[in-house]
Length: 248
Image (cartoon, rainbow, N blue to C red):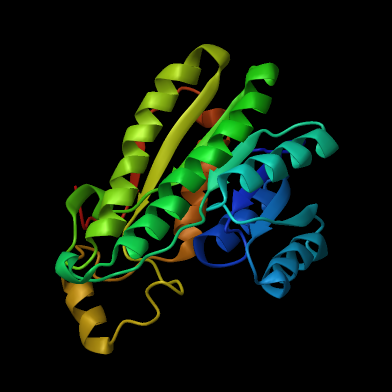
């Protein structure tokens, strides 16, 4: 099951956190993985080397998803060079937290530039390739706070909510070409973005999660592999919740 042999997958933000776990998991199932990074080339190469050491195929590509034209051009070049692009995982994202009254316009603009406009630019570039192939998988990484909200994360929550609307609309637009579009809404996951929490904050968060713990990047990566596979061919326009029961 979940055999991705012969498929090409591009993972934005693939050098760390959930993106890193997704890159490794997709490669383990046989996909050739293109790992996107913005500035940390060393981390991206480490992921690619780990994949190759395990017998898989991987390469890295630098671009900032927040630069729409640059992202679209880079993805088009990857697809042309490799001859195909079967899977796009939009994992790159940023969180600039703060109460709304303290949020600066530039913070909101940067959040939406990366999380929303960047995802749209990548999806648009991938769609052009997938429509010609009449097949494809597009997976957006949204968030549990995009569904339930969270104090101090108004801009981030709004950006992640936007991805859910994008998912549903794109699913309707692309279904006739056998392209599925889905989102994953992770709960609190052990990544760099949650690494700065204090022990008191972590205790408070865990108390709000029925399973009583934060999640692992690998648990989100497993959902990515499923949605990328042929077995999920009849799943589109959905938000798959992987949050330990935090939001039901």
